[in-house]
Image (tube, rainbow, N blue to C red; front, top):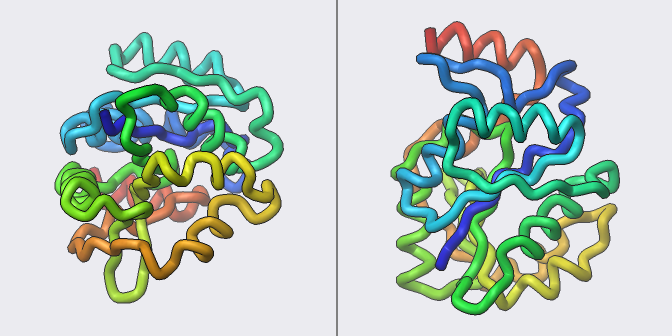
Amino acid sequence: MLPAAVLAAGRSSRMGQMKALLPLAAGETFLSRIVRTLHDGGADEVIVVAGHDADAIRKAVERERLAARIVENADYAQGQLSSLVAAIEAVDRPGVLGLLVTLVDVPLVSSMTVRAVLEAYRRTGAPIVRPARHGQHGHPVLFDRSLFAELRRADAAVGAKAVLRARHADIVDVAVDDDGAFLDIDTPEEYARIAARLR
């Protein structure tokens, strides 16, 4: 089993409104597009980690009939790592090999990129696999189950970056030509540009 998690617990303070539910093209939202992309790319299960206004996300998942399980992170104010740990707690069971993680801020990643990351992990068994292009690193990132304990112990102030740095030599970077894997949409200006382009 290789489940995937969408981290969508934050306040979206830079955007000024909940990013997860912002519309994209063809009636999709950030959240619905990511969930479907993860499934299309081969994830065995998708969970959505919610925190701030979790009820709105839960209702959206039900309304749009998304194949996703909601996990609520009551400690979301402690930062992104708390949501990653909540996702690990939700999926860590026998048979789970690792966890594919992406942010709700990165809605345009392609299913081909998701599939490429999963295939590279199955081929190499590397502890961390991620998309890469011209020195950039994108999403989703796959963490092998062997790192779950390290991630649980990581410093909340530093987040998963400390684990990435410690394991740098063992990371497998998958070359992808996918703008969406590297496109973080955080501000109203970024969203306006992308929404106009998609229309």
